[in-house]
Image (tube, rainbow, N blue to C red; front, side):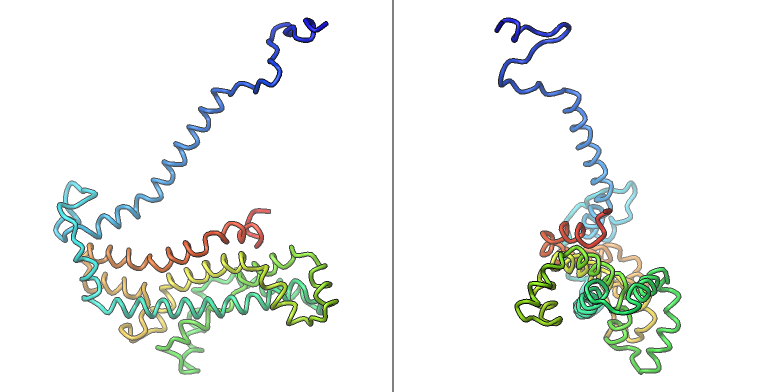
Length: 299
């Protein structure tokens, strides 16, 4: 009877007891091919960054050499020092950090409050107001530039930090992300807070808001990068570039007056990436979870 139990089936072999199935060679090949393709795609996306960093260390005469080369004959660390001396680039960095940090803080505050109101509070016309608010995402920024500039002139905010920060600190994207996250939280959390005697404001500040840290991390990255890379609006509303200029305006100044100094342009571009990279490194553990729970994860 035991011989019949262990006898192989016709046309096949019976595995021994406790023996794991044999690994499929084609499965390994697919994994290797997938990793190779991913590495090639990553290299394609990183190649401009690699070329920018390499060019920032080249001597000026070798930037446009023929045939082109990735690395120059020497590493010129002086390019980064000269990038700060041709223009007040340090001032551009400080202005960009102030504008992006303050704008991000305002955007987070407004988005958290509006997202909570649209998701957890019940009031007449809530869904209609949210639909109209969300429809503003379809209006391109270029359409709003002229009326926004007229408004800045009327309130005498041209050439000021307020003009760079306030107009774009209230976005529907932030409210949408926070609303989608708050909708995922169970109603029992608010009920338990009310039983303990907490009101609406206290429930929002001490129960709901701490749970929204991953989504707020994603929103802060989006908002900071938007402010940091904004070019059209600062170009229009800022006349005194040396005082209120931001990073994109500073880089444009290199192109306008020192267009042939490509090594300095690349060095300044590398420097301008540092704040956003630092922000991504600090918030990286929250980004994946925040994207999944904020309605942007494809669910």
